[in-house]
Image (cartoon, rainbow, N blue to C red):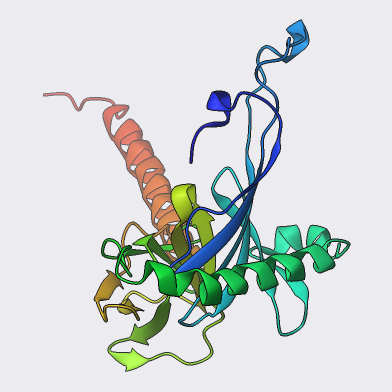
Length: 267
């Protein structure tokens, strides 16, 4: 994403970056002004970018909306229920606002019209895919055995955003995985997040399998427990051992003091 500092002025911009057989997009970007005089009290403030990207394609998902702040996704849009979906629970209150739903559906229609009208004219002129997806897995919170946590499968270098994400535990498929969140970044490139709630155990082996539907390339990322924080049981055991050693040290010290304070026997 071009940094906000490089933007000449505050503007609301609708960019049609490309239309082709696979993907078309409508993008709006809001950035604060940088060319107008800045009050002295704002000298230390940083510029930020809010990105609203509508995309459509001849693959699944056929249409999508991503809203991000400084490349961190805030919301997607569920077109089957006409509601915003927050990526994290902390954003749920903001997702309730729906004043711009009509604008979202206008963008959807415009994006799909580009696919049907302009896409065939660019057949073969623009690659249908670019790069190879890269996946990595990490925990959302510090790892503690026996305490609920969430695995995050992060997919980068993704274009177009036509993918499936599956989880496995010890090579067995995991059921009940939530939706995959796709967000746009600079230049209509994409990244994706998949979340899996679990309770970690020392023997766990999880894998996140990402399949790019356009070229059938598959990326696999594995997760095994590393650098776990001490569990409550281990902490209690260590505290007990330390207490026992402390008491033992006191007893040994008293014995030595009594021994060396004995009067020496005469010849």
